[in-house]
Length: 192
Length: 192
DNA sequence: CCAGTTCTTGAGCTACAGGTACAAAACATG
DNA sequence: CATGTTTTGTACCTGTAGCTCAAGAACTGG
Image (cartoon, rainbow over all chains, first blue to last red; front, top):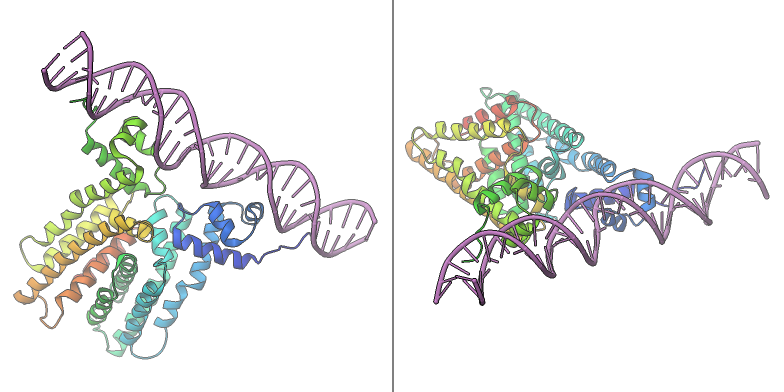
């Protein structure tokens, strides 16, 4: 009952995500959001409560819509190293194809808000944990299949690969071309 | 001639750097700077012109005072892998010891401003380039000394190590303890 | 069709961001 | 010590961040 919403909340959060992703949290104004969502300011605050609450929804949406892509690739079929290479290449491809060069929203959020926003920090932490776990599982599989030396600690290598991937996505924000990033991908695969 | 400055400009930029480093660019207000520098707002704008100009000075100061530490360690004495391990450990140590957990200002700036501020992006790019070059040189040295397989491309491995180091410093912003980061360091050294 | 509920719009609010203006203060030089 | 130059503190300015509110619009159940 009551008047029905004139806009689709999910689509609105999607738009908000795009804006926060491009501009970061602090640099995004209510006006930016109103413009992007195409709704009045009253509706915005009525529906979402605050800029911060909307940001949290946007970050969750990012996790559910974007952050899973890599994880799925890692858990696919074929040789372990091929999958890793494909996943890293996909990151580079995505980051450099994006006309706004927004990089990874989780990475950007970690850099901008980790010290000041524990809610955001925890969300990002969990996203990283999930990716790290997928990488660890991949390494584990590689050890069993013989593609990766059993000498190596799957947890340590998984953490290292997360670190490299995160660094890759951050470097993509300032990289001038694809060459260096492509080198990183190859060297990473070769290092296993 | 003229009235002499009542404050030391270098010390002021140092303080500004601390604030920007902790809070980021957008989240830092003129009032924050006035409080931290201990000077009036008039002096601030008279001396530095704008928030952005002061940020640029702060970022340059970061480069000259902080970003060189790792590079010096890499160019030191002793086995190549020991130097790399020492350098990475130093990063982890620094990042986790810092009570504000500010991470690396270059990394944070890349995440926050790369898309919107070409001056800052270029500064960060050059900082990364210098570190990358030092890492590449280290790898090259390792190849010659036999510590690192000559099969491996020094440029690619150097870029990979930069990526890992950058990722490490970003992960340090949300890491719960030193364990995972220490694992990354060891796995990275072992991967050479 | 009335009551109750929820949503929308746009005006309005307080505080502050980011910066300017200006007069007084502190120097150097002759 | 008159003059010109630079710095300083404070007041002030415009615009907007981030949010609230009132009045009404669009629904549902009875």
